[in-house]
Image (cartoon, rainbow, N blue to C red):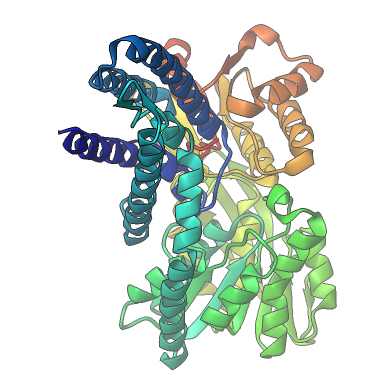
Amino acid sequence: MQIGVIVITELIYCTLAVALSFRIMNLVQLEGYRVVNSKKMKNIRLKLYGSAICITVCNAIFIFISAYVGNYYLQLITQGLYAVVLLVSLTDERDKCSHQPLVFTARAKRLIVSFAIIITIFIMIFVLLGHLIVIKGVNLSFVFIPLVFVLMPEIVALALKVNKPMEKTIADKYIKNCAQTLEKLDIIKIGITGSYGKTTVKNVLTTILNQKYNAYCTPSNFNTPLGICRAVNDLPSECKVFVAEMGARKVGDIKELCEIVKPTYGIITGVGSQHLGAFGSQQNIYNTKKELADYLQSVNGEIVFNGENKYTRQMYDEFVGDKKCAISSGEFLSAKKDAEKIFVSDVECNSDGLKFLLHIGDESRECRSKLIGRHNLENILLSVQLAVGLGLNIVQITEGISQLAPVEHRLQTIKLPTGITIIDDSYNSNEEGAKLAIETLAMFSGRKIVATQGIVEMGNEQKRVNFELGESIANVADIAILIGINREDIRLGMLSGNFCDKNIYLVEHLDNAKELFSAILTRGDVLLLQNDLPDNY
C-alpha cells in the first residue's frame, strides 16, 4: 500500500516540477538557452527557498509527532501542504513573462523532456534516501523532497548541458544545409552588421533594391545562424538578392555568419557600446563587427562603411579593396577614382519625416520619406551607396526611398484617436539609438513624456550610460516614467540637469507604467516608448 502511495506521490511531484519549470525555461529561452541570473530568476529562487523552509518546518513537526504517534499518512498531509505552498508561491503573476511567453519550439520540447527525466531521477533518489530513515517503524520517504524543488534552476541548467551535444548536432545540420543551399543559388548575397541600425538599413536597402531586383531579407531580427537558416527556408524562388542581417554576442559570431551566407557585398552601420557587458571591451566589439569587412576583403567583395562613425571610418582606412564610405555631406571617400559622389543637401527633418535633395554624381533629385529622425539619413545613404554599386539609377532609388516605412517598434509614429501621439521605439536598446530617439522627440510639438527602462548589458559602464541618458531626457522631456533596474541612475542624471523631481515617476514594471499612462496622458501629448526590455530584466 505504502509503495503505491509513494509512486503516485512521486508522479504528482514530477508533474508539478515540470509545470513549475516553464517559467525558468522561459527566462532561459529569452537568453538564447543560456543560464540566467536575472531579477525574475532571483525572485523565483527566493520563493523556492521560502517554500522549502516552510515545508522543512512542517516536516520537523511531522517527525516530532511521528515519534509518538507513528502514523505514516501524516506525511501525506505535510506533502499536500507543500504542494499548495509551491503552487501559490510560484504562480505569482509578477514572475510571469507576460510579454514573451515560452514558445514551445522543438528545442524547448527537448529541454522539457530532458528536465522531466532528470527531475524524476532526483525525486526517486531523494525519496529513497528518505525511505532509509525510519522513526517508530515509519519511513520518512518525502522528507528530502523540498531540496529537489530548491534545486530546480540548477536542474534546468543541467538539462541544458545534457542537451548541448544533441542541440549542436542538430544546429550544425541545419547550418550546413543552409550554407549549401545558398552556395548553389545564383543570387547576390549581402551582409549587414553593426552595433545599431542593422534592421532599419536592411529594410531600407531591400525596399530600394526591389525597384530593380526581387530582393528578400531576413525577417524581423533573425540575425543568428539558426535565424538565417529559417529565413533561407522561406526564400522565394524568384529571389535575386538576399540581404542578411548579422548579429553578434561574442567575438567570432560574424565570421561564422559570413561562412554560412558567403556575402559578396556588405554594409557596416556603425560600432557602439551595445552588449559591452557580453563582449568585455570596446575593442572586442570593433573586432567582431570588422569580421564582415575581413571576410569581404578575402573574397574581393564590396563594402560600404558609415563615415559618420569613428570606428567604421577606421575600418575604411584599414580595408584593402572595393570600398565606399557613406556620409551626408559632399565629402565622399572611395577606393575608386571614378566613383560617383553621393550626398544629400537641403535637408528638412520634422515629425512628418524627411525631405532632402539626393545627389548621385551630376544628377540630383528630391526625395521624401516617412522615416523620422535625422539619423535615418545615414541609414538611407548607406543603402544608396550599395544600390548604386548594384546598378540602380537615381529614379529607381528615389522611388524606393518614397516607399520606405518605419520599421515596427523602431521610431514608429502612432497617432491615436484620443489625440495622443506615440513614438514607439521599444525595440531600441543601445546607447546611440536611445539618444537619437530623444533628439527625435524634440522635433514634436506638445507636452513630451518619456517612458524608458534604460540601457542594459553595459557591464561596468551601465550606471554611467544611464546617467547620461537621464541628462539627455532632462533636456527634452516634460515628464519621465522610469522603469526597472536602471530607474535610479536615469533619475540622478535628470536631476543633474535641474529637472523637476515631481515630474519623475519611478515604477518597477512596465505594467505599472501602463497604469500611469491613463492618468497622465492628455490630448496633444507625445509619448516616447523606449526600450521595452525582455521579461528577464
